[in-house]
Length: 159
Image (cartoon, rainbow, N blue to C red; front, side, top):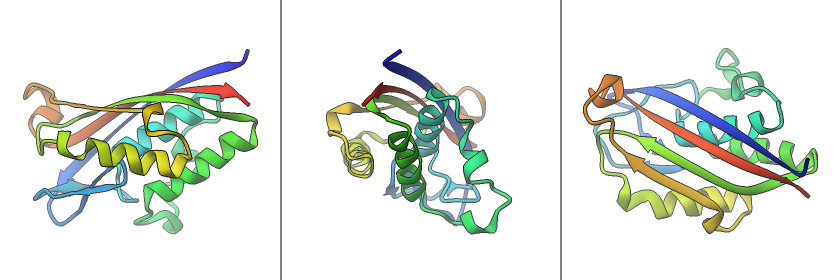
């Protein structure tokens, strides 16, 4: 088979005194995401999708939250490492489609920058990366603004 598909999901709590980083972009907001690393749910979902496509587990296996080495880590650095793992196994990204689920802040003004940052790290064209944003219509923990979630699907092709 010359293609593989993987999906990823991540969610983190919103808390005060933390930056809100999505797709490697620092977004102005009074709350940020809580996590061992920078808690970038979009980048984490993409990494899990990449790893899942090749049955390589999840990001917790490679970057465990119990390891102080990854405390405060820049998720784009981790993404670069996951991408190198994929490349070393003879695969490359065909495309990525993702969605961020958040009530606030409005993310549309930041999507192009997220695509640019992700494509730069992954060394693919920005048109190979889809980033969408939606709300949860005030339902559940995301709807109550307790957290932000992201979903991603990645298509890998054999080089």
